[in-house]
Image 1 (spheres, rainbow, N blue to C red):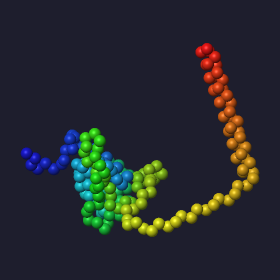
Image 2 (image 1 turned 60 degrees about the vertical axis):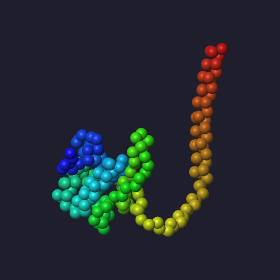
Image 3 (image 1 turned 30 degrees about the vertical axis):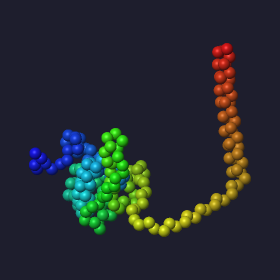
Image 4 (image 1 turned 180 degrees about the vertical axis):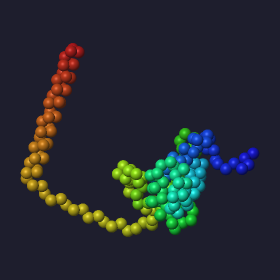
Length: 193
């Protein structure tokens, strides 16, 4: 009997399950979307709703509670400073699930879980140059504005002559390599005959 059993086991022992869920949550916070199985997506959605609800009230106590799940300060800061402020208009249901397809090995359903509204910049706050990617918010389609392309000014004659001279030197350097290769091939053929 399964009386008073709270967690879904996901066919793993306790430590493996905790690390799996923490990694999925971390990926969802940093990337904005995660593709996983139906059972994992269900657990992920429940826990993400609880974490965002805590992150909406920015106190030290709540930061410490969320830090227990991840153990990394940059992920906690990203959740509190980028994702939670966007979710102020909702009380729950911060993520959405959509069926992507089936997994080839065991034909289990693959679910894509993502935030309803994404921050403008995803990634970690720790290394902004390393993993920052600009992501568009999910909103109704707006009218696209045409981009204006400026034409470049013509090059002066000195710059043009330098680039032509550089191209000639490159071709001159490449030519001896080809000659050396053809000599080696000719020597091999001569030794084989």
